[in-house]
Length: 430
Ligand code: MN
Image 1 (cartoon, rainbow, N blue to C red):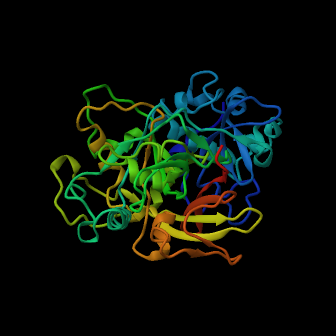
Image 2: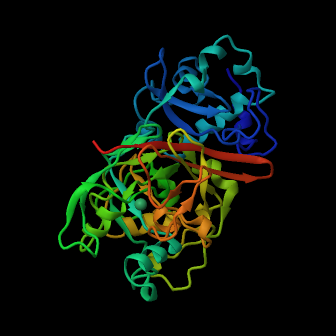
Image 3: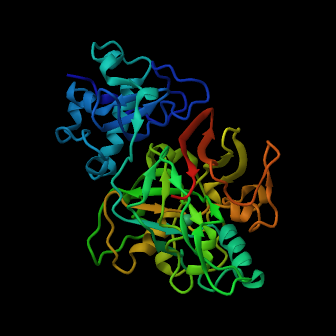
């Protein structure tokens, strides 16, 4: 019998925890993180893993070898191309799995450290290909950063009335396209479509001339609801497994011409990229903070108690073809006006059902300063203030061959909980 009693005694987020795995200094994946993802390599079929340092804990092998037997999980729950079945077990169960993995990786625990199957369980991250962590059935994109909504409203409509009258009364959102969500590392082609600038008499068709990124995060739901049911702000977090970084690619010229009266369509649905490691809500507990003060009273179903935001530092980099990364934006998840509990409560208040593996993106997360704007549209103020890159070239929007990389991390008490990265290169139009 393996001893699992210590689970009750120790906290997987304890900053003092140390592991027998060699974790490089500054790694996104210390023992306090333990994010979940789906990987494969030359030898192994797709399966679930947990990242630690430069390694992946192969959860399928860990289960086969009996290390998780006290948790009574369904057989082969970690084999397959998504985490959907696993996260559907619910947060109380997935939390226990993370705690058990934490326990097995602790410096002073010999169970796995000194076991003959250790070499089979621990896979090199460098040799693994990361896949989509979940099968996304539905994707919603919110518009929850006041700074972003104000900037876009100022540029596209009217600086004096940048926020529309509904904005501080409900978390504005739209239903996006799930089929074109892709994992980090998959490159995209410049989209084509219609655009019409004010000086044109008629729309033109061609490759987008205003290709942009959007610095976002997304949460993934793990507990379904039935049609007609609603989720309260107090219940919301039971439904949320964790977070990823999310780049919601946007063709601003297509968007500007098409979006009235029904909102985003081809300017958005050609691709969105997500990071492969889902950082659990459990791992983010130490980084809770209050969000911005909501100065307009909300209806009772949007009221909430406690700290529902998280201090997550966010960065965006642009790398020209053959060039170097340029840090173009530093923002923070905590700038979001509407929090995740309010987003999910609003999404379901009309009885809309949610499913396991659904993705809910934040919308572009811009901060109060010009270097914290989360899109090129805002950073270059719609092309009127081009960014200067280290190689001397300028950017208002993306050039073919540019690579955008988003990173994110929390840091406190000497512990860094990172999200890895989401990256992709813009290829020429097909
Ligand atoms: Mn977006």
